[in-house]
Image 1: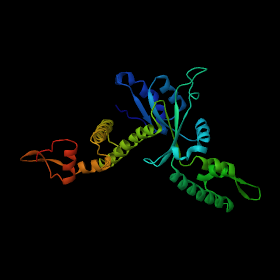
Image 2: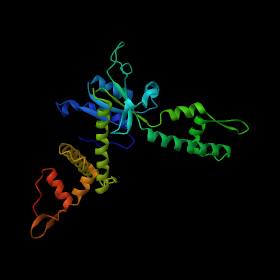
Image 3: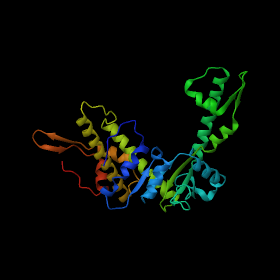
Length: 302
């Protein structure tokens, strides 16, 4: 299902409404995979109370997340926590007491922490470069309105314009670079949780590419009915992309192709209406023809 929403409504506010519809949608178990935009402690608690399995992105700035990362960080880069397949370090920590089921017990939620050490190094360099620019702006009194929060957070400025870096604030910022966190109440390993979460990203990326191909980024329409029609086409496209990904997994095709490559290949197969012969298909190139065979699909007659 889908629902048009005003652009000023945050993702996090839509989750309770969505969950209210689940009883009518399916008799099968539901697993929600949500990015950080949906995160609210109240939403996580609601999913626990409704016994819905979830994978939820969380911000590293949240208090209990920072406390968990501080506990995990000293041992994060041990070899036993490294996964060569993802080039990430990963650990998990039970945070049952964060989301209370009662005064004395909590829901079984696990925090999965991941460290991308290469990204951390890049982020630290960029941050130090940015710090130097902010410091220079303060010293030369060439202040920018957009940087006011950063000036206050990372610098002390004396009455005679001496600029001093707040090292403690800088260290706190550096400490969480390269980390990202997923919350889940499933029994999956950290690697499995990450795999499921990235499945969402893969479909979303392919869907965004589809929006480019179909000129769907521009939603301004002359009528409400036209807007609804365009959104419906987008919804159908997302279903097709999800089904294509599922079939690629079944046929073990991800070892040879990305989802985007398959979409691009099929995008070259064209149907058109001939005035004499009716609907017909154009020439099928070698790559799409091979994909038809790998998907065990009948090649359309020409």
